[in-house]
Image (cartoon, rainbow, N blue to C red; front, top):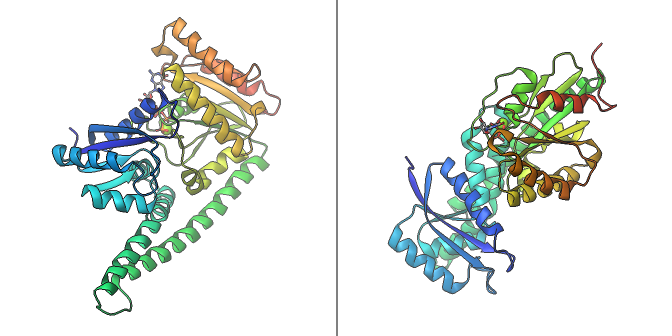
Length: 368
Ligand SMILES: Nc1nc2c(ncn2[C@@H]2O[C@H](COP(=O)(O)OP(=O)(O)OP(=O)(O)O)[C@@H](O)[C@H]2O)c(=O)[nH]1
Ligand SMILES: [Mg+2]
């Protein structure tokens, strides 16, 4: 049973977007559902001229205010990233908490985090996100106090801001240390002649299911977003290969999220092969968007197409003609040289073909 009620909003950044915005809203909704929120109302607006103060136009904000009064949601969740000023203004105007999709993602991470490192990274990312808002709110409150002639000096909110700053510094130091340790571990594996094959892709694509099928592990798998937060290394029997299960991507990935999970991305950086796990049961439009974004992310991490293998997963959910349609979409985007292997990680279909593709590459060594 959902515990809370949410109202969602999105500002279309492209006037010609008749399709993607709906996919984005659905995505936001499934993230919120995972946190126990039921979405009771949705607002969409094409980017207004005067978007600076509220993200939405003034008239739209009034409409949202009316709807909030009537429907009484616990929170208004905006798909677009809000500036501190926009959040502040919207909260004052609507009288309820206002968050953006990046906050939602961090909340899910927080619920999923079980190991120390993930917890530290999420705490830092959360503080970094909250910091500008805390600063803004401290300065506004300070100005109000001064206007009331209650004297200058230090106020509690300034202390709060400084406490956040101090904690961020400590977290960065701890994460830095762990990062260095982790990098060493990876290099040691490589020095022993092992190859690293990373399983990457969007959340829920089936990376962990595939990891389990390849390595015989029994790591937790679920349709909750971001089940896996920190990387896991495992071997494939008979091969001098490490397979790495990694954190998933999310649509319109916020660059700050990548920055705060640098540590996890080290695995991708050092890998010789990247298996891009695609949920091929997604609608063709979504398959296209996700594959395009994945390629961009991998490129930005210094990986190029020659080392990609696509694992088109969940073929058990599709009829042959539906699969062909989606494979065409992949081919259009990828060109002819990147291998696409249809698999079902859940049923164990196509796994041998995938291993053959991995091993068939000259840079992968068979164990002695
Ligand atoms: N039908 C079907 N479902 C699958 C298949 N592979 C995975 N799933 C399901 O998809 C959901 C996500 O699987 P995971 O293996 O946890 O996906 P993931 O990519 O590791 O997800 P995160 O850790 O959240 O990034 C689970 O409910 C799996 O049971 C498949 O081949 N067929
Ligand atoms: Mg996983």
